[in-house]
Image (cartoon, rainbow, N blue to C red; front, side):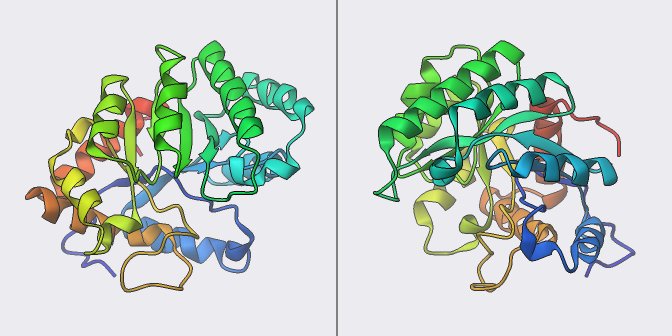
Length: 265
């Protein structure tokens, strides 16, 4: 809960799956808790063709939610070549602030890496054609993701839940990409990530929750939700030796600029 005498900073959750079925019974209460914590706008990425209409309807009902549409590598078995045409048509209709969640996942060994790369690069080409930012998943595949992004000069976006090296981060910064930082940074054992966040250029930092996944330290095993981004903000500000309000203002401005969101509430 926030103290009404000290209003929460205005925050944007740059990556939250608020359409997930785990929120079906209390989504209104989750959104209310988020607003009380200062999280008044959220980017909601799609993962497969089935999710896109659901996200579109949800965002139409809640003005603070902004849709993104993509084909996520973890759900490779659900994707069909025709879905790329459907995706392009949906993006052309307007309303989407990004193409995503897309990317590569080499953690799950049974996922066909060549097919992942195929869908990833075709979606990157669509993003370039339509001048949309991309929301990128890169689990155990940061190097391969960086190499793929380099083949599309001028592309912009965010590598969400970044878990790569400082050198890979620098290469992403050089291409104009952002890093999405959420629950993992709240764990003291995440020393490499915390060192990176403490020193990285603030203009490349976005805050996220990835809710209902990736809960913060102290909430292991629980469903994550956007209101907990306030805890992440406090940790990030502490690591950087900056005021939470300053980090909130910078990351909100970054999200507005990347996703072309309105700057006012």
